Image (tube, rainbow, N blue to C red; front, side, top):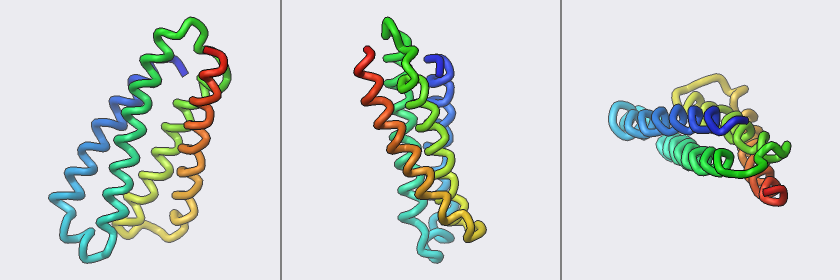
Length: 127
């Protein structure tokens, strides 16, 4: 992934993470609390914002690195984006009464997030 793409995704995930966090804390507060899903919503927004920040930092590294073209460097941000969409997205949907088949999607997203961190660490070898 090019540094501009990583920066674009950092902005998208960061902005929507703040929106979702605020929406859950205010407009959906009672609904989430009554359903017992407030913690899940907060986890989703927290992980989304954390990975937006990670993408921001990684975009900076990709921009300044003399050789950021290793497969690991290309895959880390992709895995973080996909993992965030799957992990946080499924938690948001489940919190709002989405279909139960989304339950297994959450750990798949978590696995993608972990794989992204491993790829980020691995990419340091070629830096």
